[in-house]
Amino acid sequence: MYNILLVEDDQNLSGVLSDLLILKGYAVISSNNGIAALELCMDKNFDLLLVDIMMPEMDGITFVKKLRADNNNTPVIFLTAKSQTGDRIEGFRAGADDYVTKPFSSEELMLRINAVIRRSAAKQEGNTESYLFTLGSYQFYPEKSILSFGGSEKKLTNKESQLLKLLCLSEGGLLNRSYALKEIWGADNYFTSRSMDVYIVKLRNYLRSDPKVEIVNVHGVGYKLTGIAR
Image (cartoon, rainbow, N blue to C red):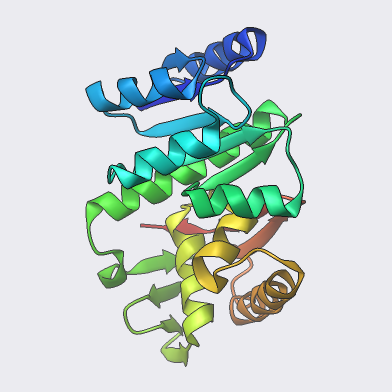
């Protein structure tokens, strides 16, 4: 069971989210401000932090900055009504792993939570570069950036390999678009977004020989890779 700290000052929303997360099998502890949340993080290990940005006493951005300054690398997803690009950039620079804008659907939130936790778990397992990923009839070797099929090999570029590896690490779940852009291109903006679209098209072309393997677009959120086995 994964442990989640929910930092949200709206008691009604906090109650709804807590019930949802518990229903999905997570253990949840709630806090209504950043100061209390910092104390909780000192006493207990969490697998994920869901953090509102606009809170009394200590806002979410300050909370996460203090957390990262103490070398606490617990994954963080911001929950906020602030939707401007500058707000998102500030959140990622503070150390967030993802950023969900209110209002959001429970389905979207759970997809993002599962994706962030999977990535975190994969990093903790060790060096994922040495893994072999099986994608239907394909085999992908991240360390060598090689995609093989039917005895032939395709040498991928660095960004192609990075993007395919993130899709593989999501293990059929959601790869958040903003996370991938920040992880590979270092920024989430119009130009990097268009660049990633090009690489997605290239990867789809490389994988077209096996109909079981597909990069599925989750509109406005990210991508899912079908046909993967580990």
